[in-house]
Image (cartoon, rainbow, N blue to C red; front, side, top):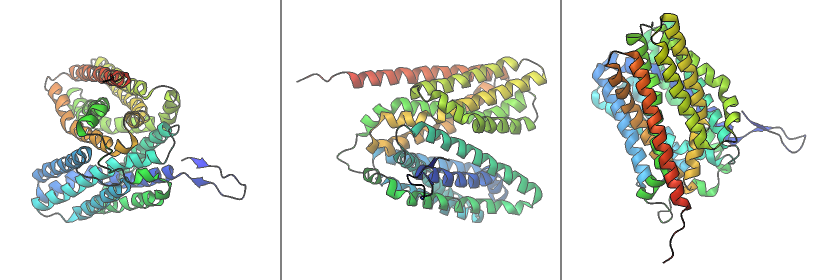
Length: 414
């Protein structure tokens, strides 16, 4: 939280608008943490495992459709309106979740939630960016990332404790809490409205915008990088690492929880330090450092996977810590990098395009790790992921340099 000193001694200090939005988003993230681990359990217990696949696929498709519609310019709303629409759809979807009783209801709820996510996440980054100066940008986005991670983990932890102490009938209330958790975000955004630049309220002038092709060309390195981050990083941590740890490395289920605790703890402790360390470096350098740390983590886990139980555990913990440090570098670098690549009027569309790659990466990523895991060799999985990360990072760097060179090339006179 950043406190701004008032100019006069009689005036109290106030919270910056960006921090108000971040704190409200953190509260929402805490409520999401309550519901996140139990969505599949709730649906499977009511309608069977097929409903779980239907929900997550409909959510992903709806989010992707919204992102594409925004990027292509078919959906044109001000950032504030887009954010509030996302809040409303999210609220309706999760409020209805306890009452789903058919596949059709699951499809409708999943579509509402996915559409809400697509609208909200496309709008919130431009809104936060509009509330800070360029000099504050990296620190604010890093703080936002740390807050969201810590609150999500805290909500998941509380949900786990409540399901131990209370009957399973408590689970539907988690979804209701997640729905109402969006209200503080909506209020915070509305309260910050007067601090938003006028041009940030409506960026829908069809004559001033880039074409879809031009937007994709400008944002291509960031889009490719975002896909790589979620396909080869976050989705591996969430889906593949638990599988490899338990099935191929002979580790107990407690190891999964231990890795999560280690990951979140390192982010909370190290985020500010990493942000300061990278403050004077270009954003792309910070992103290269992030992927470099992930590659080192994969390599360490792969090498130590040959050892006895204690050595394997040490390798996994080292991976979790290095991955967390990479997340710190990513969080203070990616959105500032994306923001620097596009005009402010196109930021919502560019962010939506980036979010579409995030969804595709989360969907496609586990297949990469699972495919490697079919070999039955844990080291092969770790080394394969390290190679994939290195290759895509180099490609993103080449594309970024090529586009930057093209920008600096003077146009020939006619």
